Length: 105
Image (cartoon, rainbow, N blue to C red; front, side, top):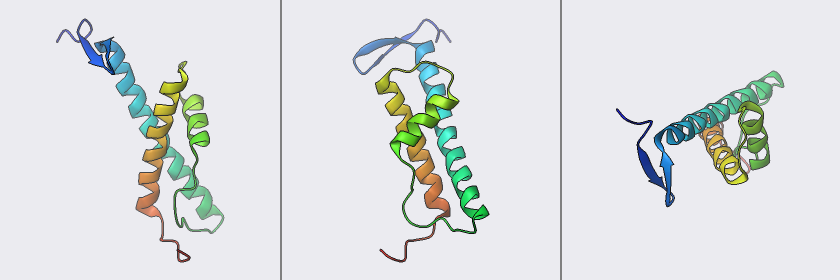
């Protein structure tokens, strides 16, 4: 396949296929960052003898910090925000799998 030379249109811009592959890899890594985040959070709660209850407590600021910390690449602010959303959504999905409903709502 001539993926390295091919181009695709993304958000109205021509982007080389290798750049698209990098974007996919970064999004995949952001998903893994979010999944690790929720596992870490739940583990910390369990060591404190607390249960995961209610809505996901993570914030976008935390997600951005985790993405910047774990990805060793320079990211422009829009791309950082997009990857932080990916990480935060992955963490929320993981949280919903293990959390208990909030009895006060």
